[in-house]
Length: 245
Image (cartoon, rainbow, N blue to C red; front, side):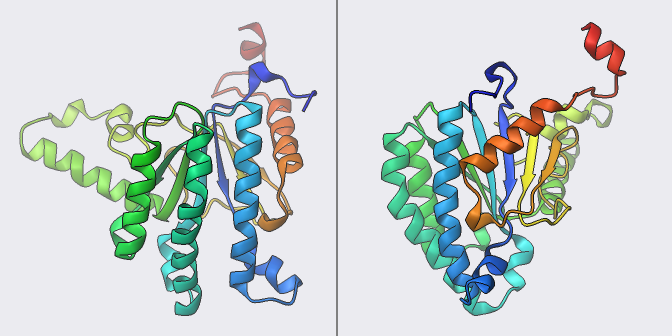
């Protein structure tokens, strides 16, 4: 922690929480066992992010593709989401954390939708860490929905075709209220972004670790931040230009 440059922390970290199933298999347990222990990692990482001073943390919890998993696992995950939210929201609220959700939430069971809505409302006025959970989320779905919204505005005469800019797209994404992530972390050794924040991660630093999500802790987050701070972020400029600036 003392080696971190607090003046060069990313405002927004996004994490693909991968490896619950493999971790459970290593323990000789079923996949849901891994998901339950993954919740512990969520708690630890949220605590660490708050302590370090991260402003936005987005966690990829469930993709639209995950609906194709075995029904027993999907049902177990939905129950886990509802139970975890009910259990964790009081502590999140106590610690001034604002909980928000992105994704095609209409696909979730009604009980889960109500739990998410209640949690978001209860923490809406908090001013600390913005904790964003991506549930039933797909970046391609998000981009299609944004395109529909923009096309409707053009069709209704609210916007001219040549008025569409990069900002127009950003303002119609589910993440319109958040800055783009500067750091994306994926656990479990997989080196891909799996339909996660495709537009928003355009200039993010990507960090991949072999650590499986249920084993990910504060020390692992600090390692990722140390790696982030060791990189030179050029945004298309030369190294000399960046150093001069």
